[in-house]
Length: 413
Ligand SMILES: O=C(O)CCC(=O)C(=O)O
Figure 1 (cartoon, helix red, strand yellow):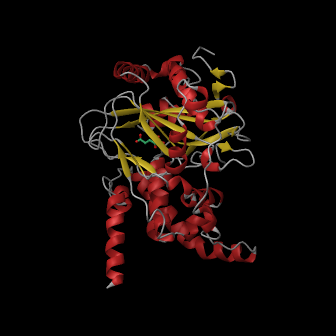
Figure 2 (cartoon, protein in one colour):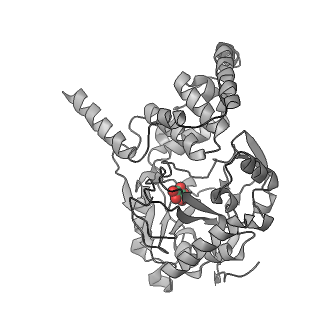
Figure 3 (tube, helix red, strand yellow):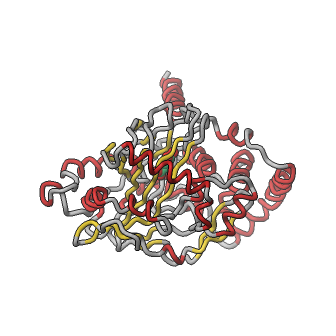
């Protein structure tokens, strides 16, 4: 019965992927919305239901057909050569070996590699927790309006407070500019490496981990990609992510899971970009259940990973062979170790089954010739009840990390 066997294989694959997560319908049901939000959601759902036929009529008359998967095959296997010319063999120091560079090109992930001592990791963890408790001394890179909204909605967390703080906080900048990382990154990215975003990933005690997601040029905060690679650079290579464990992590303490090699399949990210460009079309195209989930996640939670789960679910149905032949791997790590990976690899984390929050530091690196938030003076930031515009003008240049002369020493710039 090949059909039954296929169905069993599909189910086994999905249950491996969903390990540690509940299905999206359950996740949405478990949310606690206010009575106002629940009433508003029903009104919006009904309004969309009424407007749908009219929308499709107007769209047809204006000659704008809707074919979300058109031409996606060309994004299923992309080559991802690195641009670095320095290796351990040619330049010594902390550069990567040619073999490590080849591993990164094939798998889109390298490590865990040693970086901080366990004591340095613990000190940094405590520093971030204390600085958040001290309200980041009023210096928020996302701006006061977004912060006030998040606080008002009970969503204000380290994840929001720490984002882009390499600009304001020397202790965070120093880790982003770590000379060992600078040389490793030069082997992958080239001579001019910049950190374009630091952030913290917290998985609270006894909660699910971060849901699977992938991003090439990071459209998650707005309609335009955060990174604009120069001609000839594959989008998936515009960013290298560095994830630093700030305590020991394993499958019970929300360690990372990644599908090595999935960075060469850019279909999920392409679909999400299409969604960003044609949000209304997608919403009108969704069946009632998908629309309910998408509306709830996007409008009432500010949780981009929940929105990502909606997208992932829809994508798996639209593209049944997506990530079909590749297996998830998990990455237990010691405090202070780091993992370098292409964010276009599908990645997420296991649940945190302990009583303590799991903290990790994420740093995004790019090459100085990649546009950072190019043409985006502001971006929308989700706050739980709609979005707030965040001023990006300060963030158009990365923090330099490595130049042709070598690592940029960490200093107060
Ligand atoms: O730490 C996590 O749970 C997720 C990390 C992640 O998504 C990233 O580093 O891009």
